[in-house]
Amino acid sequence: MAKSLVERYEEILAQDPTSHLFVELANSLVEQGDNARAVAVCQQGVLHNQSSVAGRVMWGKALINLGRPAEAMEQFDRAVNHLGAAMEGRIMYVVSFRYRDLAAVMHEIADALTGERGDA
View: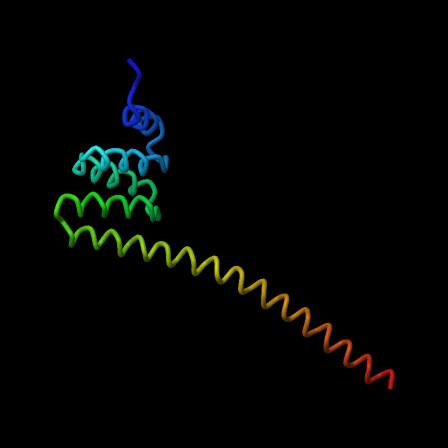
């Protein structure tokens, strides 16, 4: 008999507990109504992938389904914090390049103006 998707995910995670595949396993468990097991999978998965936004969201979803909204909000808040930190890092990276570009353009303008004045 063919293995279920849940069984395949479990086998993969048994071989590599650090895999982000735990989110897919938890999602499958939530879809099957096995929210308590999904919570356990997310707890374990987040131990190895602490900044997993999807893992924390799935954990929160399973907690909501279990009637534990306060705990779910804690996971949602952590997901937002991780997302915010990741986005802030990316934004700073982009901004630093934009400032370098701007500095280069300003330098070129200054050189051009200086050259124009010197030619006059």
